Image 1 (spheres, rainbow, N blue to C red):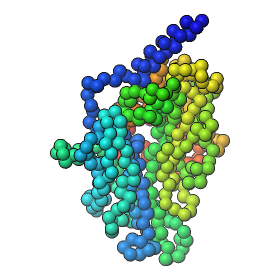
Image 2 (image 1 turned 90 degrees about the vertical axis):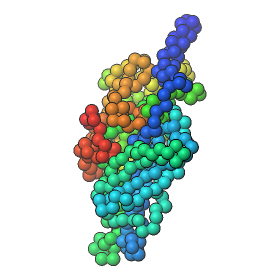
Image 3 (image 1 turned 60 degrees about the horizontal axis):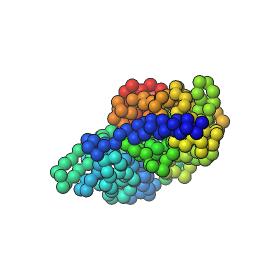
Image 4 (image 1 turned 135 degrees about the vertical axis):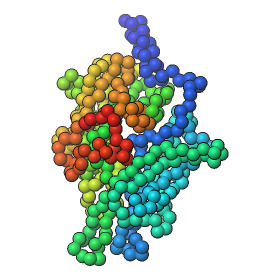
Length: 369
């Protein structure tokens, strides 16, 4: 019996080695830098004092994103913004870290300190592009270009003339809501279009899913969220304790409740995509690797059904890629799946925004919620 178990474990480890390592070779061609498009997050900082008037509020953008390496010495990432009336409105050189060919460089809050008198009260579509220059090599390339939609709402007392221009500005991200990402826990360490290795310390990888929600900051922070996994019509796993958090949150800068916040909530499930030591795992962790086929994720928000999404587990210890990410050059190893947005807990939203606005004006092909 011990020999059979040992041989079975060896077989599992052999398959896992192929499934999660993809035979890394030093001679493999190094790809050009790309942007991880789901990592792009434009947020607006509100300024109180437009053209010397403290009661007229304005805004400038900041941006976060990841660049898939290599990012070498001499590289400089920049972001440029254009308005319909001024295509050369703003440019920021971002702090640029170096990264190897199978890693990524992160940019956070680029644009946090804007030049004087560059703030605007404009609402509507804003163009932007991310560029990478290397003065040492004499190279320059646009890594991403797109546009985002700026909207506003009034804060405070509406009927007093003094406060008539107290507007809070934000980016409309309704297009994110029908898009979800499924992935295994190992990808949290190696978030690349094609990750090449798994940390040696990892004995298994749990099932992860990330979905977007809309609402006030109070609703997004204090609502109760729980994900449940179904296989062949049967509930097989649920969220681990404390297994949900906002990995991305965009809340407008306001002192009042606003329904215009967004959160990409990450759920960690009691389900293993692959497992090298299943005998050490709690018995209530469901082995996806033993049960290939279609699965459905259902999410409850405050006890009401709010999201459903489907994915497929393969026979090779890997989740089946839908191909949506690769077809659309999203630059992420996460698998993109459509989401059904159910109920009214997200408030007012444009359910068709993804058709034109997804990924900042770069809508997905082969995608239908």
